[in-house]
Structures are given as C-alpha cells and as structure tokens.
Image 1 (cartoon, rainbow, N blue to C red):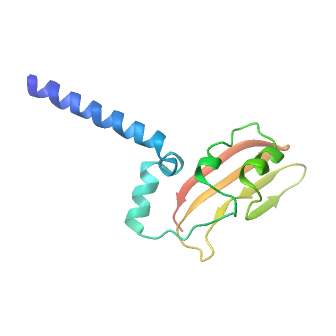
Image 2: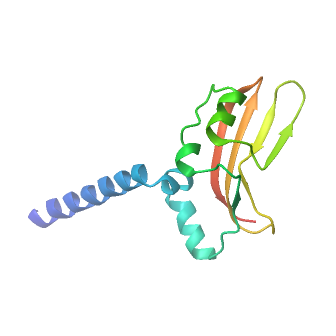
Image 3: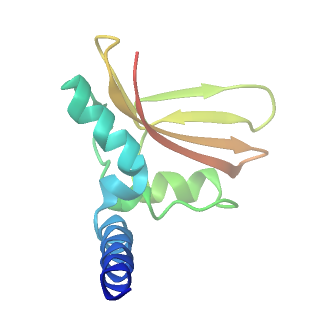
Length: 123
C-alpha cells in the first residue's frame, strides 16, 4: 500500500511539473507537448516569422481585440488575407519551402479577433 501511495504521489508531482513548464515556456504553451514532440520526430522547422514577432507577444493577443491592437502588439504580418467586410486572416509565420513549421495565425471577423491559431504544422 505504501508503494502505491508513493507511486501516485510521484505521478502527481510529474503532472504538476509538466503544467508549470507549459506555463513558463511560450513555445510549449503555443504548440503543446504534441507539437514539440512532432518537431523532434520530424527534425524540421522551416518557420519564417514576421519582423516583430515574438512568442511572448503572440500570447498577448486575446479574442475581442481590434486589428489595430493586434498590429500594435505584433507589427505587420507576413501575409494578410482579407475577405469581404472586415474579415482577415493574418499570417505571422509561414514556411517558404512548404515544409513543417510553427503556424501562427490570427483570425478577425468584423475587425475583432475571433480565433488565435498556433500549432506545429506538418506538411
């Protein structure tokens, strides 16, 4: 019984450490553990970021922010796809060679952020 309790306690400590690491490391927070494992397995990262991009700044973007607020925080995106009205897809990262990369996009509808998308994208 004592071994069982120690094992459970060790598992809980490991889980807590993993949660804390995720909060302290911006890439872990953006891509998750699965994204970082994929990055290690595929051993490629062809990511090109916009000039003023930093992971810590990307984490500042929140739903409901305006286009101007996003530009103030992240600067000009690499690519901006504008649809009708005030709907945008902003690309703050991409792969110049169509390889695996860390995807960072912000989606706006009616000039407001509705989705913040980040992942390790496998092409």
